[in-house]
Amino acid sequence: MISTATTIGQFHFDNCLMNAAGVHCMTRTELEEVRNSAAGAFVTKTGTYESRNGNPEPRYYDTILGSINSMGLPNHGYQYYLDFVIKEQKNNSKNTILSIVGPSSDETHHILKAIQDSDYQGLVELNLSCPNVPGKPQIAYDFETTESLLKSIFTYYKKPLGIKLPPYFDIVHFDQAAAIFNRFPIAFVNCVNSIGNGLVIEDESVVIKPKNGFGGIGGDYIKPTALANVHAFYQRLNKSITIIGTGGVKNGRDAFEHILCGASMVQIGTALQQEGVSIFDKITDELKEIMTEKGYQTLEDFRGKLHYIKD
Image (cartoon, rainbow, N blue to C red):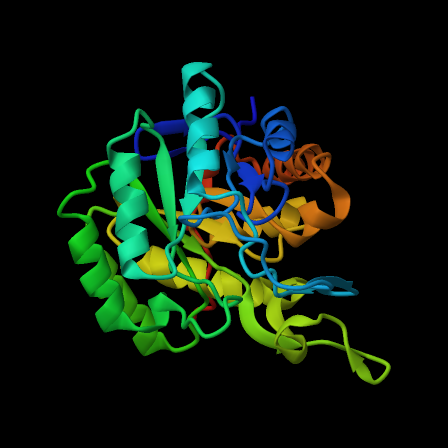
């Protein structure tokens, strides 16, 4: 029997596929649609301390090879999503991931302390990569700030916590980031968020309004970068830290490659936005077909077992 089941720490998932934060997760209705799909879990929209309207539209645009967006973190506020996942937890529904971000460290601590004091016992994802908030740098590119923030968080936060990362592009940055993450009881790292500050042009105009057209790039464009980040951290992180692969997944082969590079779960963003929740059935079937062809029964049969070219 071919199985795509997986785990993050003590949390079990019947399927390794789920949505990426920011896609099909803004409202309870959207989250319920993902819950009722073939996805093994869902992650909520990244919630801030207070609700946000986000950037002016148009702020998302589909391209031939993916998408560009500068959403500006529109969301209903972390409490909206916290209330929802607590309800899901009580109903013995699928395991969930609550995504949160604080544009300031004070807001981050306020949110996490509220979650620590709540009844929620599930996974939380702290987004350290928010390239679409004007004037705010990505925390994960500032290693000193990242280490300081994590050190403060783990003095009081005792529940399972993972982090969403931007893409890194230099080997020394993989080394430096992994050295920091290995010092803390991090449940998972999610690689990667969109590649920030791309520019798409149609005719003679940009295609989105915020930031004069600059935005995060997703889809086919980013899969090689995402795979590199997944594998680099798989090689460097403590085995207690699970890896979620995100970026450029639109078919079973893409999901297979993420797992081959070391991912235990795989999130779908642009393709989910474009095709809807039926994509979870399609990719699951395609992944199982590949596993069958190669004689794999479980994800552990090939996870992280990427082949290198030898002399």
